[in-house]
Image (spheres, helix red, strand yellow):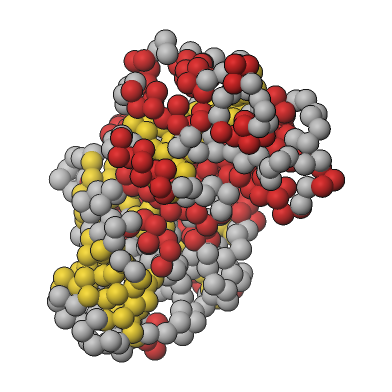
Length: 344
Length: 233
């Protein structure tokens, strides 16, 4: 499937691939998404905003240039945005494939990367060569993050992204480093229509992490430990739908990771914490019935989640059809609705 | 203020909060137990206010600058959380002494619209999602009688205030069924630096103190009377 190479959004015209039943496959558009949702359904959305999370600086010890991409927020709370996982990259531009930028300068625990006056990154630990735990130092953190950061983006795009290109209609606290992009095709008008139909909307916050490092071994570590918060009202809405037998629909895989993590002990626990849950083909879903999500490349952690949700053959058949019908992949591309979890 | 308990623990963001009406609103809200964040351009004035009231979250930023909206909203989300009330008070008169429209520079007109219309629009867009998801919240824009009456020399400011009135009406029409309300409030002629920038020889005796207008606005909000979007105090 070819990637969407522009951040221009197509909203209602975005293609929607619907996989339901045992092997059913329907081509639709986001403008018709109401017809696949029913009164009583609960749509769960991630309302994290996305930070410009790529930084270029000098390693003080060696004087070398390096790019650091924030990879996941480590908590403990949105008012303390200093602690992150990150990956180092060889200095360069997003226009060069990340696979060609894996020879990052060697970093050691204790290194300081200077980015701007009073703003820099302290390296706390280095793992697998390029996976860092870091602490950002700044007297005016938010201002500096936006001043010196640029959006993480990949070489399939044609243009420089701006901060606003990465936000969704639900954007609130800025904890994600890549956008929870399943919401990109939605408008509030579409959300209001769904609510008029009787679909309930509830939210959570999940700091979406980096999606690609350019290195196969490091990509296998993804998703990293990520921070999320589920409010009590959202837990109550999920439990009510479960009790009454109505569907619980996740808008995006970050929502799945948060909800399934919060329920790992057999009961949904509201509040904020980090999760290391990796959802593979054998994951036993306790809460999410249906998934609305973007189209991504096979082999990524994203597609691992899809394969745990729907049979591998059904997903493969859907992706094959989508390629044939010229769907577009990745964050600015088309989306799919997987309603086949109970049909395997 | 007649409804002090209404404001306890309410989270309120005020733009233009270091002087005049914005400052009066910030201090009254702070005294009533609200959690207040304040955005203004002057770091010096923010520092002065912050020294007196360290509990008020002071954020430097220019609401007329599209790029500045993201660090402002990021800081509010990170340090204050979801807000209950957005008060768009920051306002720009245009070049003073005020000029006839025909003598107004296009760039200055544009700057007035950026500050008085686009700024409130962008901040509304930034904070509406959390309000709509929770199905509650209020956005207050500050209008003027210049929005209604055509006064010579008040061209760009008047147009911007007429614009903010209608922006408020349309937003309200679109979101009122989803629990969020908009108000556009004309606070009356006040004894503020901005008023004297516009009319240097104004008689202070004819002007309301901003503290009086602030108190009236907070009472109006506490009464939750949304029967008319546009109000004159």
